[in-house]
Image (cartoon, rainbow, N blue to C red; front, top):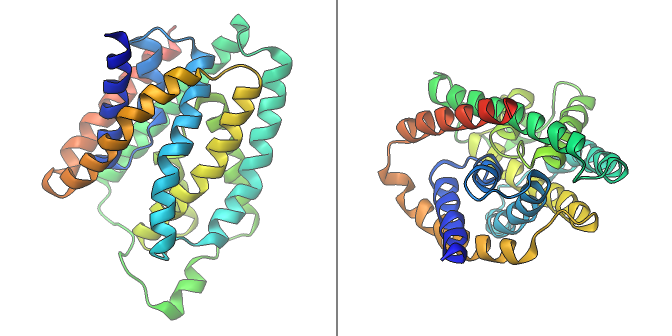
Length: 263
């Protein structure tokens, strides 16, 4: 019965990701910690690989549709991948199961969830949205940030956050890209964010696996539920009021964030 509960949890998170596009880490990690009592370092490590595998399929289909701007993905990864490796090094030195390390991870996770809640609510409230389409001749200009170092710098922040908490590659990543590339159409921003999340969560997840922070049987159960959940969520997305779901989701994430900080 407990095994079925993990499959159902994977299905639920996959459904919400399909409906809203909000990263699974912001939901799955607190769900594993609070509902199933999984240790924070195991919940974070397992969720990183969960995110890598679930977003891999999306990246393949987006690449086929030619909507991924690989220049943006590469620049952001230049900051995020090294930052992830440095964070993993310090986690290994400190010991992921150490009580002090666990405290750092849960507090950072709580702050990351509050940031995700704020960015999710921001997308609900903001009046102005990036264009959905752009002329081909203007596309090259739209993929240039205001300064070449900004994507690397923000990438490093996201890389550290994702490795410590498994949260940040979804809603926070989209908001960062919207600020860095204001002229870029929203579908391309989302596509770049998903494509960037795959190598980042894979590197961070495998790094966590190398220090014993991944529960492999649990990962398989979560994936068994999430893949059909994401498919169903994407089918229902057009029939569900986006603002209502995102508003409820931002409140849920804020609650989980406050609870984690107060542990």
